[in-house]
Length: 172
Ligand code: PNS
Image (tube, rainbow, N blue to C red; front, side, top):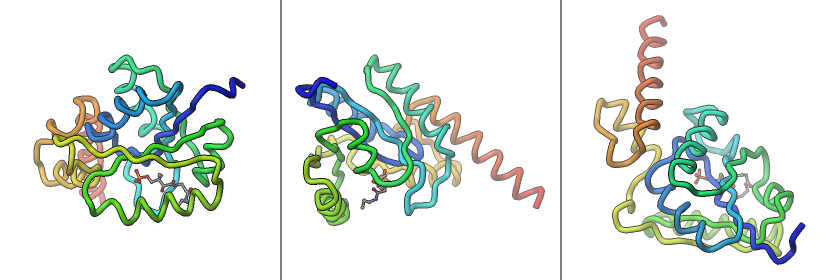
């Protein structure tokens, strides 16, 4: 292990990856020597896409950008995963003030668990301020266009998902 290397983890559920996540990835990539995108397998949220698909969608977009970051799924505690990866920093994006309370609490808990790894926050860029994976899914479910919010391949996965959901409903 190279102890001088600054390894950063950008964790999230990426359900699915949006232009908001991609903006943070591009900027985080410049701040560290090595960037790992950590795709959480299970969180307290309701997950739509399984972890394999969430990981492969993120990986595809990162490759397309020519960003040399690893996309790794993890189960359980983020700080345990970060420690295993020899990370020194966790990177999180902050959209509006509404994100702050939850993010501040989470960074405090993580710090208590493992103070050697700090959290840094990157403010979302102006044009991605309010993009969220849940809004994107809701818009697609209601037949709206999400091309401003997610890459083309992700849009296609969302459309597939909605088709399957409809099929299941009709079968049931
Ligand atoms: O994209 P999200 O849903 O905002 O990401 C949240 C995530 C995955 C970073 C967070 O839920 C997490 O770290 N989950 C792993 C479990 C964990 O470590 N929990 C304790 C921290 S409060």
